[in-house]
Image (cartoon, rainbow, N blue to C red; front, side):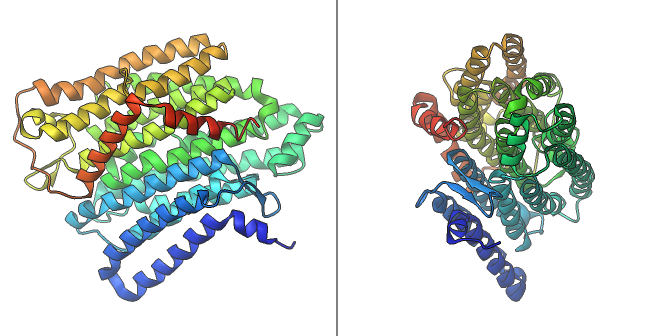
Length: 480
């Protein structure tokens, strides 16, 4: 098979990131531990440059014998993943330096994981999907346990590895069933087999259930969420921030591409699975977080609930549903980065604190930090007119248009319940008796990220239209 120049051109961002990551790895090996700061900054710049390469110039098409696809949806999702990964790498330095675990391997591993996410998003074949998924997963297993001297970090990495391996096995088993019944692994071949009636529909549905289960693990949807609270709490905080944004966006994009692409003919069958997963995720995310005292664990259940809302947009199966997903993921990325930037600034006597009670009286000692966290919590709760409200509104409107009335109502009720634990953090900051004051944060990247994300949330709260236009253009990639 001869690969033409067009294929290499379409994969230009991935090739650039792979080449830069390899060079940074060599540089780190040659220079040793003293290279960590340079490698971190260079990898972050490379990730942002890769995001620019996606759109300058922008091209669409398939490459490498239709194993790889680029369209407006995949390009937008890649850009979100790259920005999230770049910011989390920059946020990591101060934390790892404090625990004496700052090494050049960390930004290299994050870059490799991001490369895997990009391959996942552009996968147009079940085998390409699996290769990208495993490249992402293997790097993230190591990153989760990167703080080797910490039992919590080691335990988080081990749990993620064991459960992730099971999910990968389920995905492979499902892919083999689909290949057997459809006669191919390419998304185009699968779609043709289903439309022509050449595939045994019941056999393909069984295979699809296993594939969806494997991908549901990656987005931490119920009932495949069991790893999320423990890994979020045990992993180093910058790694938790990474897990909360980039892999979730990539896996959700892949789930959308798989179900709305080759398996669109089976919409009536998989819609039922997604609706159940959505409702269960929204319910668990709302109720399980009510009694959480650790803010990282609370954010884990919050992420599960947010996945439930996003899945509701997918269950709608419409252009407005996909538009709502893109909008929601973009806002979720900004809000979550802001929350974790604030968590990384929570120190008392130069020791990290993670309990919600440690925020008591924060509004009196650190009013700017408290206001930023208030903005993020109100937005996550979906209180109008903040950006998070618009995200949920678009999802619920798409669900109602698709006549998913009961799931939409349950989603609104779950959002009301979830508001309690978001507002509890605000109550602790503003109304509880002051605890021992949190250290005044020094000027650094985390303060910059917290301020910038708060401004972005405020801007999109008042003027969501520009992001709505971007989301609409991305959704048209699946509805030409």
